Length: 96
Image (cartoon, rainbow, N blue to C red; front, side, top):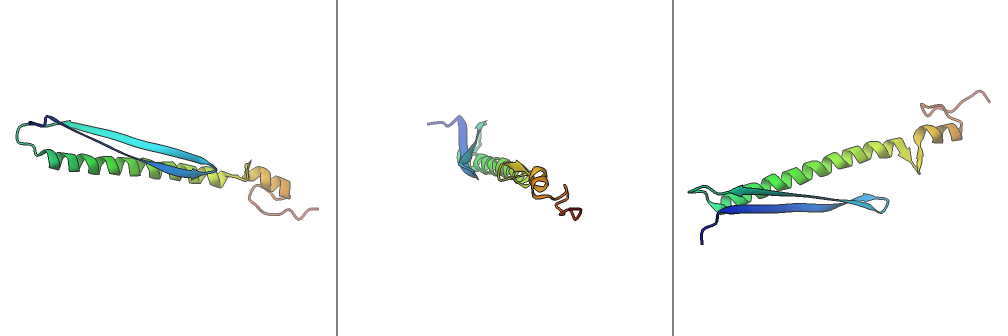
């Protein structure tokens, strides 16, 4: 049997909290040339796929972290501070 192509798929499901999740998956493939070792190519593709999925997950969590900082308990932080009597910097007003 002659292997002509190698394809790998790697993915994961990430819990985002609040009953939300994200599924990130990539598939990489390569056509083998004469003399290529299919095991080495498969391992290299898998390493690339794992890196790509983890990189995308890191970006997702960084963006999600920024959104969580802006929104707390369903309300933007600025609105919560106004409700609590603070200014937009989170300081409480002293003027009655």
